[in-house]
Length: 153
Image 1 (tube, rainbow, N blue to C red):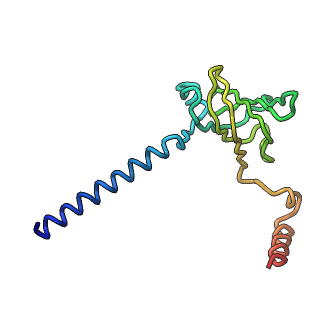
Image 2: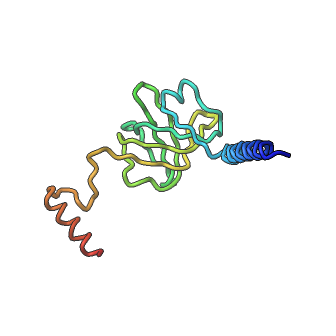
């Protein structure tokens, strides 16, 4: 076999191996992909029951209630329209989770239309200040931050 044919065979084998590896990786990760929905999108075109998705929006004011067990909460997630999706979550709430704040809930939609969250990610606005620095002016906060940094070195 000529050298030209050997190179062509090697290139074809390499291409087949690369395509095979890509297909194998896509097949292995097929259940790991979570789609992101806004409340309007979920109300208009809901995902399949039990499909892992993420729901993002704002926690509707006045909708947060805690069940008798103390760890199960229900609330509604709203977006830019009147659409609101009821959410149920059992677990410890993130520190930044409050009514009117942004939230990303990971979980799945139930047959009853309630989103069952397995994980909550609370989002803060650009004005977020750690509790330790609340009430301080900018100079005092910078001084405290530099003293903490010096103490770590």
